Image (tube, rainbow, N blue to C red; front, side, top):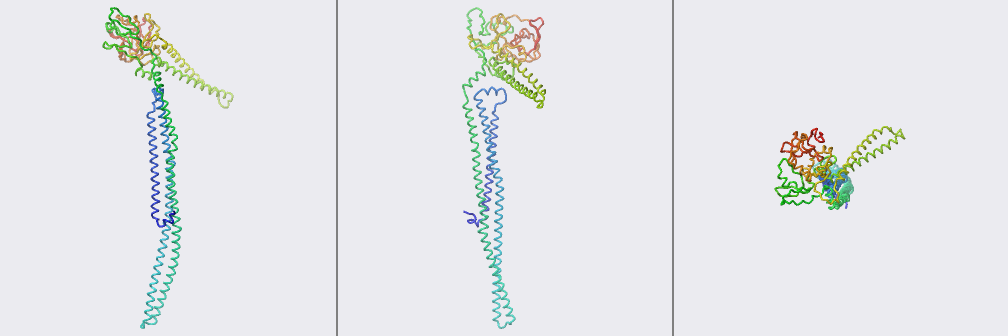
Length: 579
């Protein structure tokens, strides 16, 4: 149905309707804009959430990456970040494909509507003006006819009156004829203009207005079609990202399915395995016999004989078992949180502060890293060598001498890296030699055993335990200087060493020392010292990282060798000064 034929008299209503259509386009544009802002805000929040739970750049990240559930969570975070990116794509497409297009179309729509209604008002004003002129001609014709009738009646009245002169009658007759002529002219003019008006009116209502209304109808239908296209685009924008969103969700599902509890349990063993042997059986101690028992490797250090010795002159040794209030309690030697902190934190270059198994892994990882660096440097050297050969064959391409400084630098780097690799390989070989064999049937205590170069009463096995319950291996003097953690206290399980350790005789002074750092000495067998304090040395470091010192006749104990500066007497065995 055509607006021109059906709504020829609804100019004002069509004007209101088309204005409402424009307002609807503006409302829909605002709706899409707000949806785009929501998508942008949602994507931003999702990205921030993913970033918030990303693993921090620290040493713990390396440990977390070993577990399948941590890797799965990291994959899920990355997929979630990609998922947020698809919502950003939705926002961008809504803005470019709908909001921008509708904003531009709105300007064109308003301009077109204004032009059509301007033409309509112009045609309306023209027909109204013609109608007014027709009415004016009609009134003038009516007035002239009435004047002609009055002049005719006056003439007839004058002509019938015998008292009126002939001249007055003639004058009345001429006046009547003049009025009739004017009425006749007005009638002709009215008739002519009426015919013209009817033609214009017919043109107005059957051609001009229908054409204008048809243009408005086309404009309105185009507007409605554009709204429909935008609504389809609104849905298609979401539909276009569904495959990628599905891939993101599939990635999360795949990550969740990749979690392997058994593998993670095995990784816990790999991460915390110390390489130590569990403690051996505790020997039966027969207190009913009046005989002095022989100390064994797994016996308790705090025996009654030890308790009866004077305090201050005999020092108890560190063992994996502790007597508390006459009750025997077994302390299981494990890598507690303190040892974990040592593993994650900084330590000696050779990782001697770690348990054997963990130390071996760290050394192996360091060797692999150095080998990669060496290979990288060698690849650069090969590339520069080829470049130099090209320059030698084609001097116009470059100066061969310009490559020599870089080649020399790379050669020095390779030499340094190879030296470092050899150093760590030596430490690795040392660790692998000292680690206990799995086929060893002789159960040892939970402490890691190392061989000491010097023998003490024909006993060469020395067990070590640090004051905080952690373990270490025998360190060389270079490592002891670099270590920032407490070394281990020397202990032994042989009767000969027990006799030496529990000897009532005061050990002679072999030198003096100055405390470089404060040491609290909470553990048994240690002594607290203040920074700058001067003490007597009664037993030098035997390679286990501890020095035995004395403050007075009743106060003596072990302090970390790296915490003191020792000055041995010149006549002492192995006299030397070290830090």
